Each structure stands twice: as structure tokens, then as C-alpha cells.
Length: 97
Image (cartoon, rainbow, N blue to C red):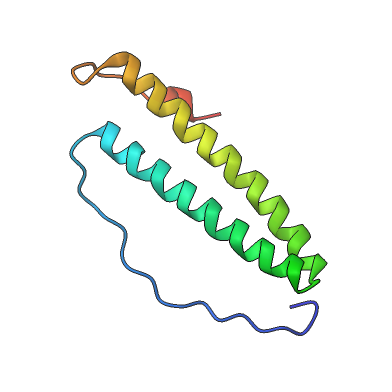
């Protein structure tokens, strides 16, 4: 890295593969995104406390990106709620931008 620090990336569990429905998939995605945002916020608070302002600034940017991700998934969930459980919808046309 630029400041001669080393990063350790721990192992993580394989993500789920089976979902009850498309709505369930996006609900679980939203839960994951909010958990990720909370984790990054926690790390940002530690960086601020430690006066590591370079890391805290970068994490602030990352939190803003996470908020955008949460909003995207919420928008899809809102569309699914409007459609109900029996409707088909082509999300690919809305997701490709």
C-alpha cells in the first residue's frame, strides 16, 4: 500500500445459492448490504478515533457507495412488492444502465 501497511483478508463463508423467490433474494441482498454498511461505519469510527484520517476519509467514500447500493436494492424490492408474488417482470431491462 501507499503507506506501507499490510492487510489481512480473513476467509469467509460461501454465499447462499438457493432462495424461495426473487423477492427473497433481494430481501437477503438488502439485509447483507445494510450489514456491510454497518460494519464499514464501525471501522470508520475506529479509524477516526485512531486519528487515521486517510483511512477514515476513504471509508466515508465507501459508506456513500454502500448507501447507493442499499437504495438500488430497495428500489427493486419496491417494484417487486408492487408486482406481487405472481407477476413476472424483466429486471434486466431496468438494471442495465
